[in-house]
Image 1: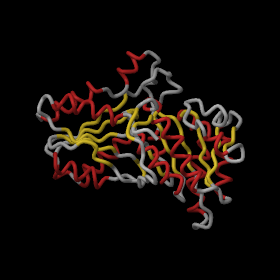
Image 2: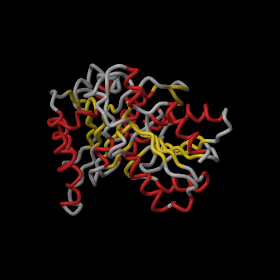
Image 3: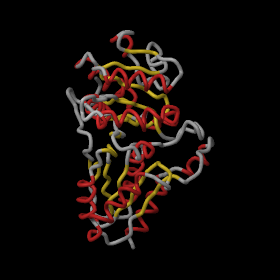
Amino acid sequence: MSAEVTYRESVAEGIAREMRRDDTVVCLGEDIGAAGGVFKTTAGLFEEFGPKRVWDTPISEQAIVGAAMGAAMTGMRPVAEIMVSDFLACCWDYLANEIPKVRYMTGGQVTVPLVIRTANGGGLGFGAQHSQAVENWALTVPGLKIAAPSTPADVVGLMASAIRSDDPVVVFEHKGLFASKGAAAPPGHVVPLGEASIVRAGSDVTVVALASTVPTALRAAEVLAADGIGVEVVDLRCLVPLDMKTVLASVERTSRLVIVEENPYQGGWGGTVASIVADEGFEFLDAPIRRVASECVPLPFADTLEDEVIPTVDKVADAVRRLAVF
């Protein structure tokens, strides 16, 4: 592999590594075979592994996830693709009522080692039904693990952990990051689920981000550095398990916290992070916790209007500046 690869190439690479390692790993979804996926995130898998392990399915989210659940319960490790995360609503009964409860309700006699991967989020002008960031939907369901990588290497490392997990994992791949480039994952790369990463050190304000808001936070930190404000950026990488130890340690160093999320403010995962910091790290804080989240409106098509709704570099920089002088 070259020194730099794209995020979308890393999705296919991460899956391929696990398929080579474990012949119980199979893939299923719409147009993931010879077509290589609508976002080209499964390119090359059909050619390498063939139709017995890469299954094209009908246009039915219920069929995809239902078949994957049955396969997982009987000894396989399926990786099911839901084309865009908005369509998780079409198979919500499986995702919320069936898959996360089997291991608990059978006393561990039956496990569901299943990965559901999906293209999440906005920023590309795909409109209200194809642009939502819905990781907060999954966060409301006990029994699901949730990963959301921000870099090509993390795509590979988190995919490895997700596929190897004996519990169901939802992997949110951000469609706005597919074309982004970064360092290739080294051989055997595994990122444990629930291990956040400090991607930029700073002493003045902690900014907690996930997936697409990580590069947004990093760009804002560059802008703020010119103003003499040192921003520490924490990439959560996962929502379940949630690495609050890393977040709290950072807030102890900086005494200020800004949370940047693409979910709508109402019901977004940032509310959970803010609540835990208020409960367990209140004495660290010298200022209120601030959240930069999406507006509580359907996402518009027009890019200028979409920028009004979702977090931007300017919005993050403004929130940090106001907090730094509080």
